[in-house]
Length: 168
Image (cartoon, rainbow, N blue to C red):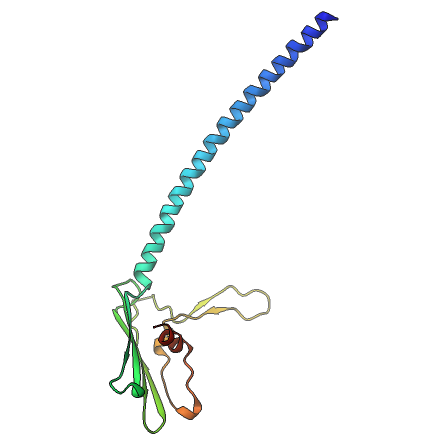
């Protein structure tokens, strides 16, 4: 019986060494895969930051000014200043609200000179799902072309202008 006990112990020890060897090999492989994933994540993060920086340079105005007319009650203008970009030729976009004594308001805006194929004011259509009408994303830049002249009694409500004026 003593010999059987020694044999079992030796077999168990060999199996344990085999399992330990496989475990060490698996851990090494896992570490290699984790190192590769970390490298891929770092590269992806760098690319995302690069793209975000390009978008920020292109789409964010470098300054926004709100100018009241000499007679504050007669109106104000918003002036957005942009860096040169691949979307439009203009470096300044304006939207002006003029209030007249007879009770009318005139709204004028810059007609954006889009570069070929870059006009974003048409919105982006999403894929149609089922029988519902497709969703359309409206571009902020369409706000500049929304001009009108109305009596104050009709009420002009320009949510974008109100938000900008309040924040500045």
